[in-house]
Length: 297
Image (cartoon, rainbow, N blue to C red; front, side):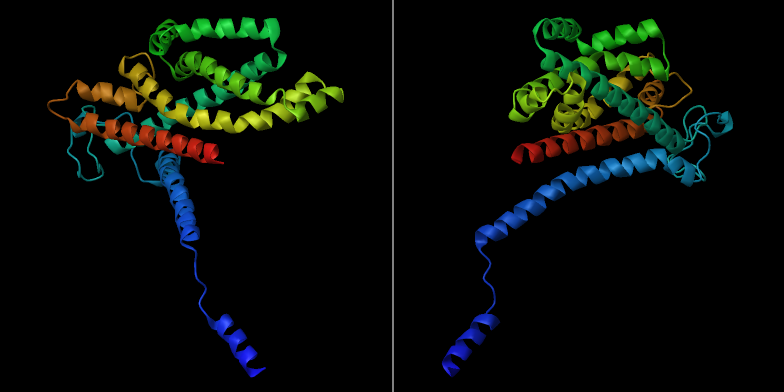
């Protein structure tokens, strides 16, 4: 009896041996979470900085600067990143410009996801002649080079924030519609869809209640990847004078204005270029990591 009690006590007090494969699985799970969390944290920080920072930080107005304060170097009193040739604070214009660029990107991806998602889901679910007509019309838009089509629409509409959003939606909606159609085709013949049809549910209810929840993850993943594309394209339009009109700041027109005095004040191009690079890279990494996480499941 005493020997049995001693053996039981020894088993209780003995340290648990962790299986090496279990330890590696734990580290892999932590690593996957960090890979998603790091670019996600950068994106969150940029959103807070651009949308909340101007209200919290003691920054001057991004427009209406004095020529007496033009081209001040970084570290000047009241101007941590200096001023541009018009005397406007660079940090203030950087944050307000980031808000403009991110607003355009969010609006374009939101409109593209909703409109393109609906169009693609309807085409895939109804099929037949409806699918053929919708997809052939979208193929016509996709056949044009996206940047050329966007520039043509922006030129026709004129430079403004709403017109920039509309021009960028011209290539966002067809791309999202194709993704939505492909995702819908994967679920449209599943048993739960057939059961809903046999129960007499109308088509709109099946689309909203059964199909939409199954394709939304793919739509959101594509939207995150599209954020970087839209930000770069908006920057190109503003650089060409077809996007956000001056004096309203955006990263694109800040680069355009800075390159006019590039040899004298190269930092006026460097700051918005770095902001554009970091933002696009963070959104692309976040979208790719979320896609890998979803495909791994």
